[in-house]
Length: 140
Image 1 (spheres, rainbow, N blue to C red):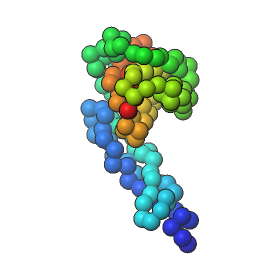
Image 2: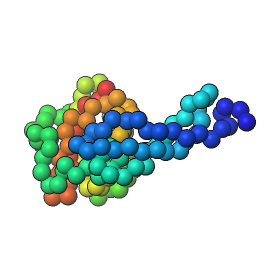
Image 3: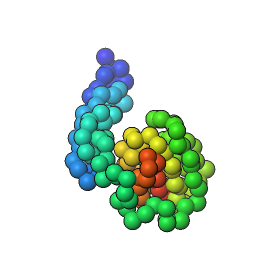
């Protein structure tokens, strides 16, 4: 089989944006010679697990007070829609501008942490209040 046809496995070595630890392995498709992409499917208290630091209280100093250039209301939407709506909004924004995302999907915190680690955007704030997660991203 050629390098483009080989199935590969990868290990996600992303950074832990939460306060716990997280590791994971994933499978992906080979994208050249000896490289593969992986999707973190681990569980626990880390990047891919549930972030337990958001149990109804702010963990970042208050995302409601950060100045933002645009807001996406993704409340009531489940994965991957909050991320896709944010990605679409970020595409129209300039580097350095900030986007606030409102989401009710409990996986949104881990999804956006992984998204930012992968794309180079900065996750500035994460808060939870009454089942609504407020995330503030700065475009790379």
